[in-house]
Length: 520
Image 1: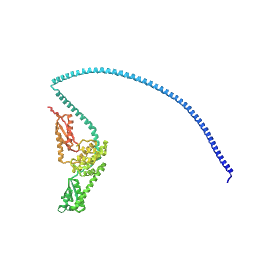
Image 2 (image 1 turned 30 degrees about the vertical axis):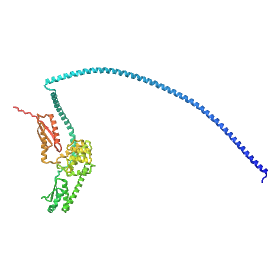
Image 3 (image 1 turned 180 degrees about the horizontal axis):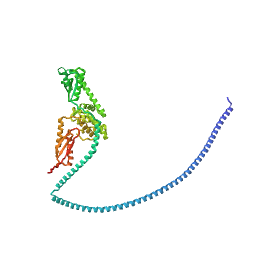
Image 4 (image 1 turned 135 degrees about the vertical axis):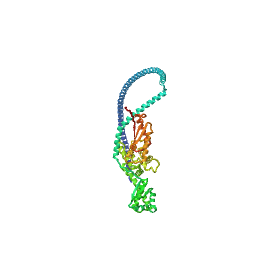
């Protein structure tokens, strides 16, 4: 154990240490407080100085801004005063102009009032004069009626007749002059175009017949074709619809039929049977079926060949097939397919000369007789059938109108339709292209003369040059030179409306006056 003195010493040391620590803490705190207060005082002084400087600067800036504002305000006020003075001056000028215009308007109004009063007076005078003129005119008419012995209506009718005759005379002379000038210019150009077209597509024409001759290897084949009790020949005629003529012609038989397709089927079938050698009803039926398929293929090939030859593409397959059928169709002995191809070429050449659409012209020319391929299957003329087919297969309106107008049934609506009409006439009118029966030819000539004889003033008429020209003698006392122009035109129009003919017909009127005297 420690002694009490030592313990007291330790306690005293601890207490002393605590007291010294407390005193040191208090002194440290007080020192830091003084330092902090000194720093705060210095900051406050700096802040006060900064605030004073800011206030001073702000006051200076304020005074500067106030001065600038006062200057800007003064400047704006001066500018505004200047603008107000200028506008006032402009308003004064406008007011003066308006006043001047009002004065001018007032003067014009006064002048117009005076003119209106003057016009009113003149209108009154004019009305009085009109009444006087009407009275005088009535008196004059009465006096003229008394002198002439005609009423006003009779005088009007007489005047109208006189004027009408004069107009007819002048119009006839004018028509004659215009036609002569047009013919001098147009006919020359037309002849050149048509001549070039004809020269470029000249074609040979061979008239088709209604019979076909099939050669035989020997005369014994005739008996085999006839068959036992005529079974073979009856079967062939029944299946094909033709007449098989077996006569004394050596090594040949004749197939007769008005339908060329049936005749061609029978010819092919018979040639196949002769080559095969087996001729009996079952074999005949088989060969006829093969021949029908072969003819159908031939029809399509001919249609495609026609489109390639003319350069017409994009046709509906059915139209191509119908074109091929035209190979077996004739018109007045002329093959219709060859005729259509020729018309297409002619249209293309003439369209090229005139600057028209060559492809469209060829298309219209190729399809113009397409109705003839189906005229035995459908009711109506070949024109109406062709129009219906082209509408069905969505051909253009130009092509449809060309088909309708190529025989003059409707008016052509395009130059291409006119070209188709001309090309059709050229192709049909070629020497050797078509043939007519004697009866038809004579009837056409008689009809031409009857049409001409039906007009007043015609003495005699003669159809000459195979119906290409109608020469008419007129009565000179009833028809003068001017009336001849109108009469020829009327006769030509009636011929166009009542007759169908290839080419054109020249109407030639002759007026002859003779004075004969004898010296004795």
